[in-house]
Image (tube, rainbow, N blue to C red; front, side):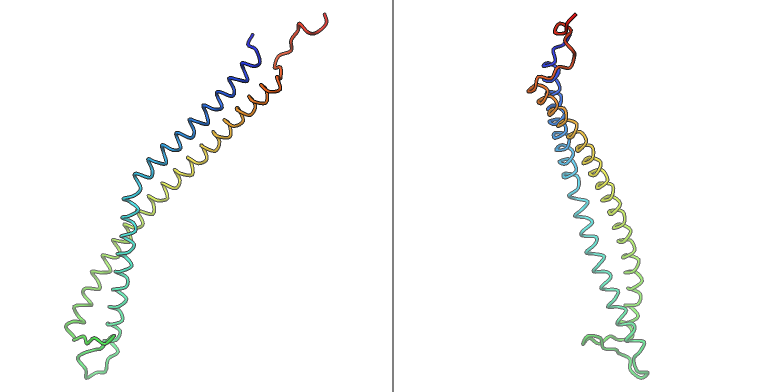
Length: 165
């Protein structure tokens, strides 16, 4: 028969092993995520900035096109923000607008892909956190039960030698 104190010491040891293992695994996965996330997040930020720049360009071209449509009948040029645009330049800007819209759509698709990647990473981090929390809680319970049982010398099994016959 195994003495009760050995069981308590074993529980403490198992609890400490669970805690140390949980901390190591969490540290390992966090370092793995950190090393693999730098480039995709930097790419997502640069894509977002490029998309904002494209949207600003499209808005400016729209302002020029609406000013050209609302110009007086006899004028061949239009002035927007202190810059004169001829009919040829306005036509060129109209063609450029369609290519900018296509390019902005491609950038938006890239941005959507990167947000999907971020969602997957966050789901993995949440799972890691939950598993680490549960394992740490179990380890702390093992350690606490082992320490309390060892300190109070709680007997798990009734000793028949101490009872009258």
